[in-house]
Amino acid sequence: MPNIVVLGAGVSGLTCALLLAKEEGNNVTVIAKHMPGDYDIEYTSPWAGANVLPMNSEKDSRWERRTWPELRRLAAEVPEAGLHFQTARVLRRQADVSSGLKVALSDGLFQQSPWYADLMDDFRELPASELPSGIHSACEFTSVCINTPVYLSWLVGQCVKLGVKFKRATLNHVNEAAGMSAHGEGGKADVVVNASGLLACRLGGVMDAKVIPARGQIVVVRNQAGGLMPTASGTDDGEEEILYIMQRAAGGGTVLGGTYMKGNWEANPDPNIAIRIMKRAVEVHPELTGGKGIEALDVIRHGVGLRPWREGGVRLEKEKIGRTWVVHNYGHAGWGYQGSYGCAERVVELVDEKLTSRSLKDTEIDW
Ligand code: FAD
Image 1 (cartoon, rainbow, N blue to C red):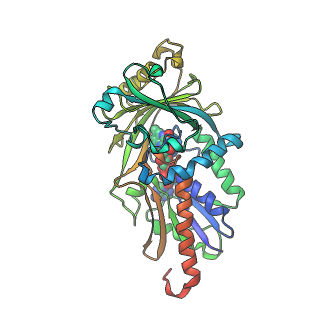
Image 2 (image 1 turned 90 degrees about the vertical axis):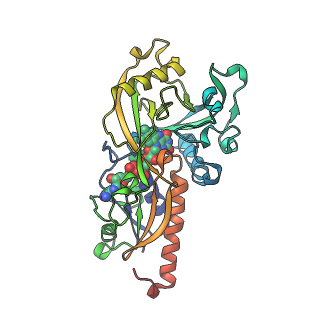
Image 3 (image 1 turned 120 degrees about the horizontal axis):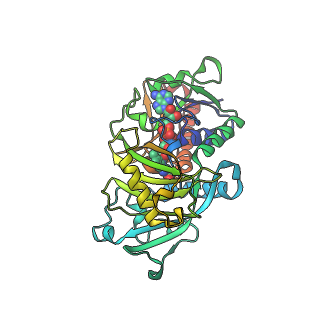
């Protein structure tokens, strides 16, 4: 029976563990420094909103295309997973369109006639009569918002049910994971899946200098967003500041964002940025406070998460490091949830390729 160790218990590692454990015969162990329930600047997943706003280019759309059907199914059929349907409204500002849509967040999301028009349900371009002032054009579609703490815990539960074992550990080198399987004699893993997120830049054997943080500051409030998740192609507050609003399922509060500050590791919320986030949110969506301004926002917490941004995009490939075969899955920037199943599906393919080649040519491969 193949022993697989997944390094990382963020949305990437947990989704990989789940899909690997569903494959007949796999023994899966998850090793992580941080687990659902923790809030730490080194652990991105709990800080995300999260919702589905497709943001890759059409060329790299596979991950989001393959993920959407599963997130939609969970929202429709599995309420305890913590997802619900909300209407996404993508606003392309006149100022950004005139300057060539140079947005900090992404290009794919704000394209006119985007590739995801045929993916997302109820996609429509808003008629001119429905456009707010200063908005060049806009589209709407049915999306989901994920209550991330609930969803991450649900993923752990699904994994445990399928026999996945969990261990807490801080590793200095990716190869250490190979000796930490909780299954079989001697704890030897056949393959390690590296889902270490931002910390891939500091993990021995990987040390990927292309990975840097894209700092996201948020404000979580008790106010309701009424089923609408607006986002805009830019703001008047500089290229590092962005705008989005989403109400989490199952009492998770409403997340107001945000920032996209590349290379910035600052863990503490900046109060001036927080004020600007709240002002922009209330301006674009006055329903949040019944038209009363930011004083009527009821703040649950201010937070900062660091998106694992990677120059050149996500790393999804296998590599032999020392005597260990490693399948990498990190560097998802701001789309780790909305690409989670597509990427994990690719990880399963890569792990299967490795295991199959081992069973066919066992003696030729140095494990
Ligand atoms: P992480 O969640 O950081 O997990 C990494 C894991 O690896 C952790 O368990 C950690 O402990 C472990 N690890 C790392 N190194 C070691 C080591 N040496 N030893 C042991 N364990 C180790 N995405 C969306 O899809 N939609 C959104 O709306 C969205 N909004 C966002 C808003 C904000 C403010 C932020 C910050 C992010 C947002 N994202 C969103 C992006 C998303 O959160 C990330 O892409 C995703 O969480 C990355 O997950 P991960 O599992 O790769 O990394």
